[in-house]
Length: 419
Image 1 (cartoon, rainbow, N blue to C red):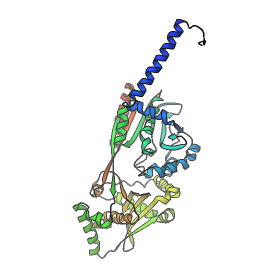
Image 2: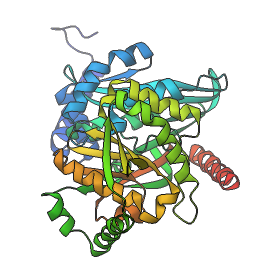
Image 3: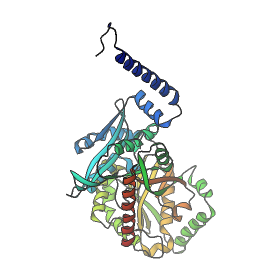
Image 4: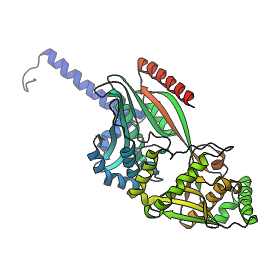
């Protein structure tokens, strides 16, 4: 320890001088270069704003997060149903695996600015093998299910989106043993920007997930007049075919658990019927699995149930087509559907969507989210396309990339053999 007021030995003086110069140069570098280097700018932002990170690993703390999470939901523009607390809590209850050799653990990354929750990224930390001695680990967002959770992106105030993605680099740096695969999902612009500026993780594969949003401007007549000619002609044929056969179409809208639950069996039946349709776009029966039905019914039983709607197209009082929707403020997210195959000749799914759009205008809904998937039933309406992407990543080391690439190829081979 240096004694104040005493003459310093040369070695101690040199050490003190070096520390002082290093500190001075570091301060100068940060203050001048920080404006041009994205990584340093984020570091500086964290330091100046005094952001606080917290990782939640217990169900007790998960439940305690509910009030703050719901407040954040109300502050995020264009909230997706899959970002809500209730969706994620129901998903964990139904789908979390706790078997001996395949165990899911909570890894919910949260970000606070002072006392305010500003971002949350719910992840599962899945160990393959014995928990204390594993060779492979998978860290991915909630929603690793057969496409029930369509878009698995973090919930964040817009100005904190880049900061919460930084957690992926933090998590990769904690890996010291075995191989961990990280699944990064976000809009393509944000995901590509993160990977370009953070080199701790390396992508193995890329999967695009186009999402289509139809903007409802003006009123139904003006909106319809601005549609492309092919969809206007399709709508004309739909309604004329019903009129020709003296069939009266009516939209019935059921909202909340008490109204939807009695008709849920019809939804399952018609969804299954659509999956069995031939000579059309293939649609799996997503609710044949009792676990998937349990998830949908858990959503209905939660507070999220008040956001749910079941749209039913009736012809002369008979339900012939259905579609589930989620009311997310000014946006209506359209989910899975089904119809009676014998009424397919009337294009009842197109008619149902047109009826839903007309209803949405009466409810001051400004956007119809047509969900994910690039097919003509969406694109012919002229919607806006939002590109999401899923990257499978590993820590950016040579041996991890080689092993990760091998595992990915084996996984793709297995999928092709099952298909």
